Each structure stands twice: as C-alpha cells, then as structure tokens.
Image (cartoon, rainbow, N blue to C red; front, side, top):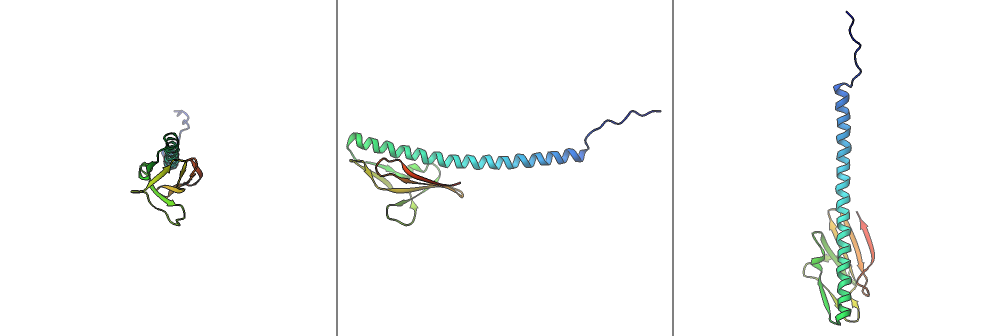
Length: 138
C-alpha cells in the first residue's frame, strides 16, 4: 500500500512560539500606548490651564476689574505644584490663587503638573497670561 505523501504543516511547538512572540509584542505595544496617553493627558491639562489664564487676562483687560483664578482648579486630576516669583521650591496648589490686576499684569508663576514619574512645567508670562516656556519630562 502506498501512503499519501505527508502534508507540510506547523508543529504545535512552532505555533506556541509564534503565539508567545505575538503576545510579547502586543504587551509592549499596550504599555507604550498607555504611556503616550498619560503624556498627552499632562500636555492637554497644561494647555487648558494656559487657556484659562489667558481668558482671565483678557477678561481683566476688558472689564478693568481684578480677577482671580483658583490654581487648584487647574490641576484636573494631576498633581499641581507651583513656584512663586523669587521662591526656590515648589509648593502645593491647594488654597493658592493667581491674581490678575487691571493693567494686564499678574504674578509670574511656574506651574508643574505631575502624574507618576512624568511631569510638565510651564512658566506663566505676566503680560499675556500665556506660557513663556514649557519643559517636559515624559
């Protein structure tokens, strides 16, 4: 009796190795995407805070009335600390305010948002309410 030729196929071991490599690649990709999402979240929070500060500056100039912003509201779930002009250390933002006076000046501040080991630091421009510079450690 002639036996039909054996069809070429993958062994169970080869299939398990391919699945293990695939799982490893997916795991690394998931961690990378999660880290990118956290980093993007910090930058988004910083840009939204900049928008609030600029709107407050514009409202102050339009109404000629002093405005204040609770810095705690700018944290949006991230840990927010600040360094006031002339200070050497960051302090918590709880019960801290930014005061904007008519004439378009506010106190220069450096704000730092942190989540885990990632952080974004921004220095507030006292004339425009925007950020002069941003530093990221993501």
